[in-house]
Length: 165
Image 1 (tube, rainbow, N blue to C red):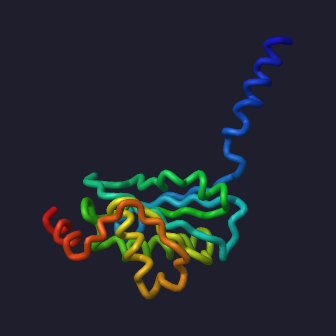
Image 2: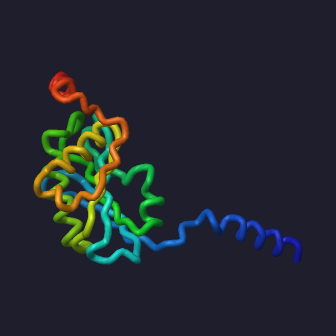
């Protein structure tokens, strides 16, 4: 009896740490060659919010597991869907990242539905890509905010650093 009560107590103590939502996940590779990851809470409906996650500088030859960032669980628990691209270009991926995010958004629409507002989010180079997405005419009407952590936004100096790489 004591063993059963102890096990029940441990289970109850761990219960708050478990996610309280169900999530659908999609992974694949777009026509550009960029791999993608998508996570959608079951409560998400077309017209719901979407976080477009942008990872930072990465020199991996193939980024087949782009991940969805450090705020994945928080965003999902708040009802946001999340999509992230691994980018087909290694290193300073700014040259193709905008087109690959357009591709990712189309994949999201086909597999999940059309989102309402979009929040680009990323750190370092990913923060710069998030800011660039907010400036694009085709994204601008959908973007309701940007979370850019430590982006290299020194204008032409940031681009010069990219070319130096």
